[in-house]
Image 1 (cartoon, rainbow, N blue to C red):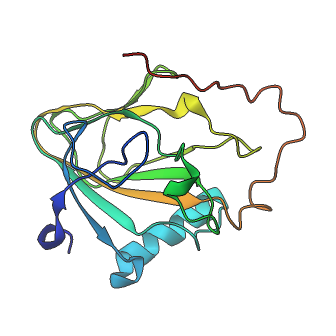
Image 2 (image 1 turned 180 degrees about the vertical axis):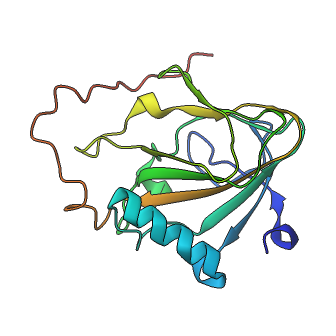
Length: 187
């Protein structure tokens, strides 16, 4: 389903503006409606069951392919600029990566601030929250798609937005443990 719709992946520029192609991300992707196939409906249902989050407001499934040399430089999945997401849906509260293939070498998802790297394994799902319970951005979630050295990496990305999550992930009264500071890129 995804292959005929694949196009060069784009990124959101840091200061704002239109989506653009970049050496920052070397991959192809397609956006698919969950309702277009029973497997994708099941993926979303399983994600809802596993996390307890409401999946009503999530972006379409993004199927991405990283060939040899394909990668995605370190980035956050939340939007730093509120103009990049619909105000009525809120920011991306959580990310789930469905691994749709094995990769012979390379292609890990690495979180440098958490000292974690997850190797793609067919059938596995990697899930994390992009926002603290207070809805402050969690800057520790900066992550990268490491270069594929041998083989091909296929993933399905699901981004769940914060609206309707009030009772699924209530705000935490004690915020002392929620410290992750924004920083500026120095050139």
